[in-house]
Length: 157
Image (tube, one colour):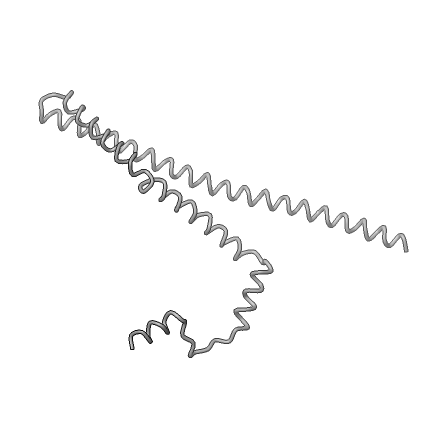
């Protein structure tokens, strides 16, 4: 009898150890997946910024040479181009929340929410099973009209 209990606890300990090791490996893989997605987003944004930077630099040179030829002085041309850059910098500085911070925050939040919903759909959590069972058990009433539509229709008529 004691031998059976000892064997049972020994086997249970092995299974629990294997479970914890597997769970740790799963957490490591999930973290690596999230890190790779974040790094991919970071590098793509960095490359887009560098491309934008080079386009702006070369457009500034074109504008400087163009104004320089028009005025006969490259100093005046590049001075005007530098003035345009200062104005552009001030506009970006004043409207940085609307132009940069909010769109980037929305992009990051969208990526995170999409990943979380994908993980929830793929996982087999108990709350997902409950929601699925609740949807399957509810009969569909063809005469049902949501409250918003009902109040709109009665207000019109």
